[in-house]
Length: 248
Image (tube, rainbow, N blue to C red; front, side, top):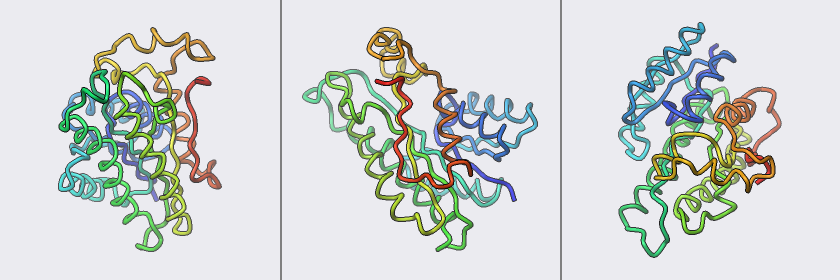
């Protein structure tokens, strides 16, 4: 039977690198996107060109009806889900907490936290032995910001990732006896487009001196950790928060 993986926010950065690497390891991959259809299709074509199996499926993880439709499409096109990477997430423009609007805060937590919960919920319904599944693995993409707090830049983002850490610990314990492992990675300064979308395109280069390894990381380096956590090689690993941060 195929291992079926859904990567949310899979059209770019860490999500895209994870989709491509997982496909190389034999997963059938659903590449989720919200608006970047062309980028998602490019990831799919990269996978197919290498002999892998992949589809691109639109869906906003912050919208429950779209999440239900997304998982329904995965069921229909690829079969029963066995792996989920909760990667979809946003940052916003740098700012202090006393400058943050309610709209900004709601958007941040709707996508980064509630979206991850909704996707985990639907994944568990398909993976859990309690629901007739054969087990599986969930990897949540957190951030080193959960530890560092991101003062003066985006405390809201850091707090959303702190929630992901707590979710990872609690959910791992909740479903461990049902054949599901739940882990998280905490990327540090990684060269992806997310910094530009937050108004700081040179952030990695400017802060590289703060990293003990003296450089930013790549999306591919984070993907290696994610795919290992999904794999049978990590069969006794659950509830782990894996730092991929160059020592920062």
